[in-house]
Image 1 (cartoon, rainbow, N blue to C red):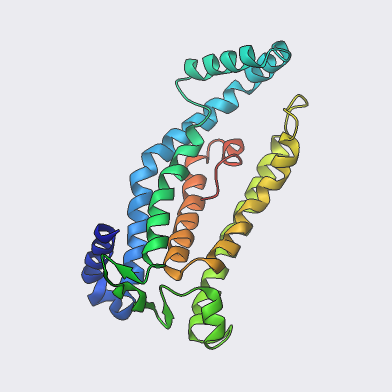
Image 2 (cartoon, one colour):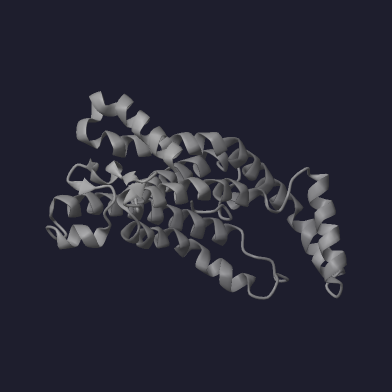
Length: 245
């Protein structure tokens, strides 16, 4: 964690002439963008996997029907289909999974009172009036919803809400254009019906994590929304299955 703290501090030093007291917040946003840029090749691979999955949909339906009473043979046959397309059914999960360590390191960095036995100086850094180590309830206790820190959170909530509504409408449209086949596994229909609402869960996460981690989430979800539009523009159905982060 000390290495990560040093990285954030170095980025903040580089950005300080432009962002002054909010340089550390800007460094977190830049760090998030660098993480997303690093996993972008995997996102492209995930998009190719989703497109392959859509092409295989008729074959997958036939395999499920043919081997409905033999789950092991069904699984083997489906893996053979994916291997033929040179993709994996788990391809779409990799970009999100690889971001989890960066998020949790950032979360712990701005939740710890000390780093390497020394007081954590990063906790005193701010985004305008909001300390990066504070949470929304701290902002409410110090000035209320429209106080200095509260306004920062309102701005983040607005961004998350706009992205969530955009994802919700896009996912609902994709699902309407590409309804599930009749022979879907038990529970898949209910899970799919909840899929459009997942983006709104980000609002809760932003409210309960340290502001630094909230900046990571807001930046990453905004990046994801834009990235999905670009990667899935020639195949609307695939984006509906993409993860929200």
